[in-house]
Image 1 (tube, one colour):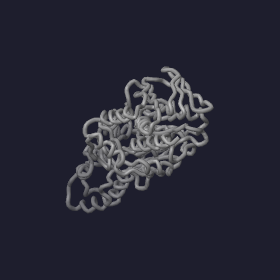
Image 2 (spheres, rainbow, N blue to C red):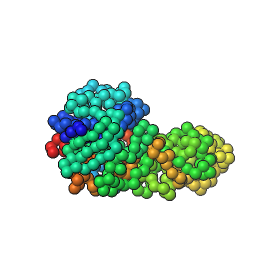
Image 3 (cartoon, rainbow, N blue to C red):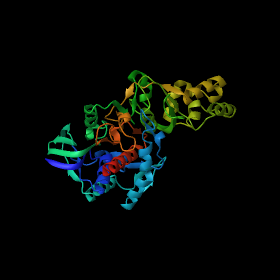
Image 4 (cartoon, helix red, strand yellow):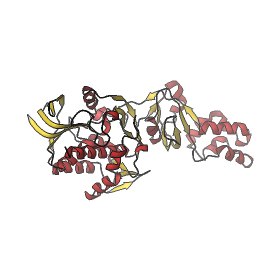
Length: 397
């Protein structure tokens, strides 16, 4: 039997950050993970360059049953704090789009940095090591693992969500939460492509590979929706705009998609062009759109000259383009999702430390908690910040 001050299950972004923080403050820490390869989700993120944070991060960039829960944790460890850590380790980075920060070279640099921080904090590693059972003791916890029995004063569950099971994601953290009587907000796929009924989608399936900037909204989404690129696929829609809105979308709802947000006066612009052109409508729309999309959208009517279109028909067309209503049949599922939404109900956790209320020295951090960030580095920032928050709390126990 091995004894530690702190046992952390899950050696991903949040788990390693927590281990390094608590270990650096003198706690004896063991970091346990069932995977043979360290931090696979960090490794594959950002196309292998790890979108490790976003310049501007606030509660408005997260979805939760309690949207204000994450505020003190995010304030306690900011993007600038993590940027400073990255720079101290000589990792070059760049801003790519809308405040998203990536490594210049490889996500392996972030993994190596975190592992190095843990090693310097004398964190003990147990990987691959599967936890079979967690038992509450009079003081602390007993973990039965295939590496032997591990006892600890404090237990941190940092096992992530159920998205991307092909790289080892499991529902372990949710099972532990339920074991200790905590409410779990129903998990669902987030930051995920949306799919459509094949019969409805058949006319659009020929557009697979076409991408354009759109403004997309759903009723309970953020004001103004998201202005991002959208990609047509054989089965539905993907791209950053769809991944963003998917976290807010619910079954049975329609999406409202403005397929030309850059041209707010589209109808009047087309009407004004009528007198001075003999161009076919397809050619006119191709000034704004990918030609394949213009051809598919207009079909046979696209061969008519713009001058032959009535003002009313032009206004109707502009409305169709700038308020396209379409209802997905579902998501592409957790295998294609970047993250899991839902998880351990934040009402069960202390807001600053993420310790379970009424259960001494049990913590849940990272993606397993019902705090889901937008696309663009926000989920990693939650992982870093929640790991540090719990690590600091552990150091003071």
